[in-house]
Amino acid sequence: MYLTALIAGCVCVFVWIYLILAHGRFWMVQRLGAREAPLSAIPGPIAVVIAARNEADVIGDAVRSLLQQSCAGAIHIFLVDDNSADGTAEAARQAAANSSRPDALTVIRGQPLPDGWTGKLWAMQQGIEQALRLHPQFLLLTDADVQHSPENVASLVSLAESRGYDLASFMVKLHCRSLPEKLLIPAFVFFFFTLYPPEWIRNPRRKMAGAAGGCILIRPEALARAGGVEAIRGQIIDDCALARMVKRSGGKVWLGMTPDTCSLRAYQSFGEIERMIARTAFNQLQHSAWLLLGAIAGLLLIYLLPLVLLLSGSRTHALIGAAAYFLMWVAFLPMVRFYRLNATWALTLPFSAAFYLAATVHSALNYWSGRGGEWKGRAQDTLQSR
Figure 1 (cartoon, rainbow, N blue to C red):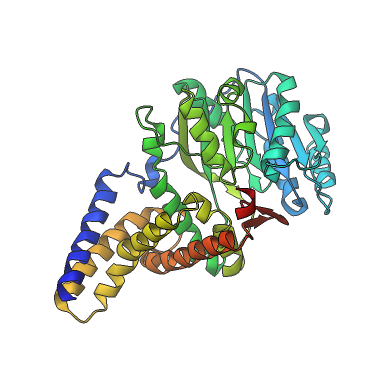
Figure 2 (tube, one colour):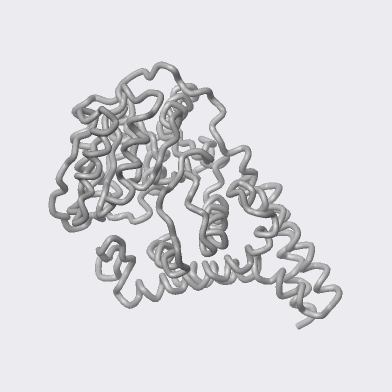
């Protein structure tokens, strides 16, 4: 047992050394922003597509932020009201009117959901069909809860134009004020970039592809070449699925972060975040029991073992655990600082990992029991739908 723990601890240290030095520098948050200056003149119209279902509390701020862009004159918003029951469409129209741009918003009433489609992607499909009539230079696919900084769209367009990207996406700054958010949201973004290192995504020689669905700029011709939204119509991790399709079809993909464009969606309880994770976690593992076991083993080895060794009572084990814990802290600290939290929050990553482990197991149990991932009142990714 002593030797087994010693070997496992050494493996953990080497894993963290690899992650820090050779895993696409995913943890270096300062490298993940766009460096091009926003374009002062946009080459063509930009069609913004928003799929919204019961988003009346946030849609007004989202619409206003888009109509206050530095390139607002080039922007037209196509909002698909996916059978909302809370006045989402009215709130969007009021925001456009208050911005003196009512003509820059088209509200589309969502049609009944066909078999084989997720609700969000069916709404996006309807919005894109109408948006393409505008013959836009770019499509901006964004969420109803995203408040865009004034230069956000111009920055993405500048990036795509200067480097020839077909898809450019920002991971927006997520809401991080409550205790559950402080413990789990920086860890969520850290885990996401661990799975999808942006440096590898940008590299055309690597197959890795990913995007953040809250803010995706894509060329219409690249979307068509990839097969359109219909090609991913049943995917619940639709952003990364779209990025994969674009890259497989020969497109160039970029993923980064922005400190200025923010999500307005707040998570006040651990349960809300757990449901958000459990909705897609087992899908990420391709519904494989073997991959689930591998993920559990990996989380235990990489994130929880350092703490166990540190508290083991053995001096040798404690030293190895401390080394691994320190490397973990070093890797996680830039993300914690990005969210303007005290550096001591970087010590909480093992506890965050334990939470995500439990949510992943819950996701698998939901799938096997036939419940799948529920979102906005709809069951998605169920065993029966496979």
